[in-house]
Image (cartoon, rainbow over all chains, first blue to last red; front, top):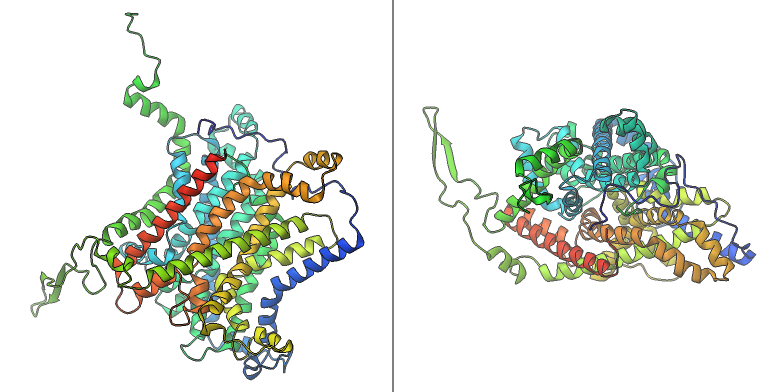
Length: 303
Length: 333
């Protein structure tokens, strides 16, 4: 416990290379041809499994309803955009989409801000309450959302926030920020403390040091935080279904349930909607993906 | 000896002074964490404590009001005491849940354990295997990595839907593919373990990328010199993996396994949307079972809280135990 000081252990590797961490592994003997084939075969199979389900849903989304629900296996059958047309023009899907974008974007912005400040404080200052706060963050992950819904609903109702999008933003922040702050703390730990000291000698206060010196260096971790917070908000169903009552204020995740009537799910519309929902998440993913490996420091450094 | 100078022991400094010093030194840190602490206090810890209290009552949607108010003809409100208002019932809720009078606590717990252990084992095993492979130099590495991480970007409810579609008994791809090799279509959701299998597959598919990325990050922070030295000493690839990679990954592994366990334990959407508890509630895990037991029909707040407290206790006991084991092995975090 005594080693939990403010100074993070300065490790041998220079931590925050702005782009991806170097991967100049020494050439450890050439692989045999057989090993190469095996490696690539495994990678290809794994990649197929990874994208297969989504690819299949994508293919199905271009099929008419009867072909979607046929046991005959065809990749393409009477291709049509009718499913997309229906979803985009005959439902409230576009409105839900905008709601989701708004909620996810706000969650992302506030999430990054709060996680970064909290993570920085946890990493740099040995303030009383620091260790317990770290524990608290872990414990918040343990309390099941499904059970929290009702008490949070009551609080939101008392604050007059029920049936508004901010209620969702706030609720999603409680899910995402503890993990992100924890993760960012790990990343800040890997940035040498000497930078802070130098900035402080130049007359920067703690907030300016954080904002102008440390934050720009933490770009990969910020990218991961953005990705994580966006995704949390984008895909959440439980709170959305509890807090929002007005059809015009649904988010995508909840609105899509309208395509699943109790007994006869409209699979063809669901496939099209699923693809449309996945695209924005995919775009955010493409922006974040090259930082994912270097930015995600889940306990990578002790501290 | 008799001089009355300031005592150097920090404990003797007057409390106000100490607070002052602490404030001067730490105010910026506190300012940085304050918003998060406030929001968490209001939205997580207040409900937590409140829930703890409610779990000792019999509060439901129907009896939560202490007074019933009706508009009188004159426009004023007449309130009288609710004869059926909720009351304190002690440990009744816990007794009901644990003896199986309400819900299927023990079956759900068994399901949750299987679900969590199998899920996390596959997440970690596959994540580690893929990370080791993708950490090598090879052609198309960047492409493979993007493809392998892609499932992470798919919202959980979409993956749940996609897999339910694939496992559909009548027109699912998986049954069609089984047909190619001469296996009769399987009615996945008609028996407990095949149904559980579909949910576990979905969850594994969804969770491997996070593990892979976290472990890959951990691997890239292991110094190359260690590998070079091992190679000079003639260590085989297996020995290098066993003696350098695994120990180097320890801190990352410990964290992601703990987080993965907590997340999987409380993973709501997959079971809720993929198996829907079929057949006949036999694949419910604790969170989904509790949700259905407490919120279908008249919302039973006290029951929900009871389950919440039980779930939290299980996870707390697990993590305390887990950390103790780690600490014994010299890992402090």
